[in-house]
Amino acid sequence: MNVKAAVVYAPGDEYELSNLKLAELQPDEVLVKIVASGMCMSDETIRKGQTSVAFPVVLGHEGAGIIEQVGNAVKKFKVGDQVAMSYAYCGNCPSCQTGHPAVCNDWMKLNFLGVRDDGSHTFYTEDDAPVKNFYGHSSFATHTLVHENNLTKVDADVDLRLVGPLGCGFLTGSGTVINGLKPKVGSSIAVFGTGAVGLAAMMAAKLEGCSTIIAVDIHDSRLEIAKSLGATHTINSQVEDPIAKIAEITANQGVNYAVDTTGVAPVIKSALASLARGGVIAPIAVSTNKTELNITSELMLGSKSIIGVVMGDSVPQLSIPQLVKFYKEGRFPFDQLVKFYPFEDINQAAKDSTSGSVIKPILIMDESYTAPGN
Image (cartoon, rainbow, N blue to C red; front, side, top):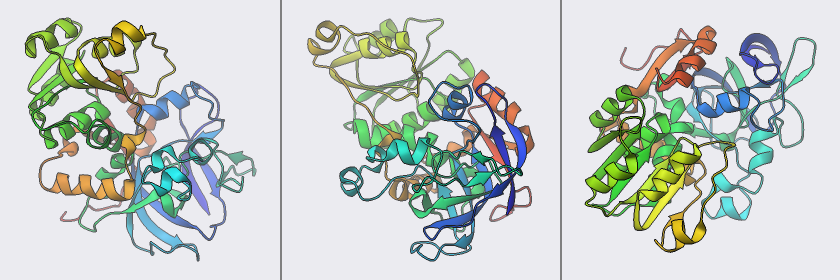
């Protein structure tokens, strides 16, 4: 079938809406009509050519839609199901079998090589030239083919325009706190960078019972949003030294936990220096930057730890419904962070996200979709 997709033909190019051909459905796949897709800073990192992902490629990995066709080997889904899409994993390796599919042995192959497990492509130009996919589904398209492992069924009363970002950005931020740091009730945490991932981490810290939640950013507008979502303190690091301010807030003890979503080396160093003795930091930005540390003075003597957390160490099929539940209860109000854009305005949405004027752009592929209750 023919679909419309936002293709990046070469590193640094803008998105170009193109007519592509979709390959035939394989037995373990479903055909999804995409209603909407969030935009993530990871998409921008790849679009700019800062990773090893090959071009041309259809990006997007925060999609939500409705299943229109099901392969004969698919067991968990049926036509008409509403689904959110997340990362691909094999389901068979030791990591997957022990509940950590975000570190699947085949993670890079399934999510970044841009082809199916058998090496075939899902997208082709009208001249039959192959186009790479991303995260096993490529949600910057009107339709896509997806392995059932990428999918999470969501309730029929959920607004599909909203839930796509639960598959990556909001999943990563919240999961980093809930599954990675596992903060103790009454503990303190600082979140460096209050974009979508950072604010999700901050909301999760509130859910987990942290009593001191410090938001650090350079945008006053985002810090105001952080206050409304549970931050007990905010720091504009262009105006105040975050290390000194965090020391003041914590009576010179430092915070028990820190999350860095910036990937900027000096910011990571500040976050590490702001930790209390025995504190833990999770740097989770997708970045090519390098950070140099003195292991003895910056880690060992303070008994501090750095942990790696991919995709919030979340199992999407468990975590996405949990986040939807928290949202319905008013405890994870991520809808306050989004702005909708028509699909054809994808380049403007990307610019607004990069500038910081919009926290989470969401592209609407299906303008005819009507949210439940409307």
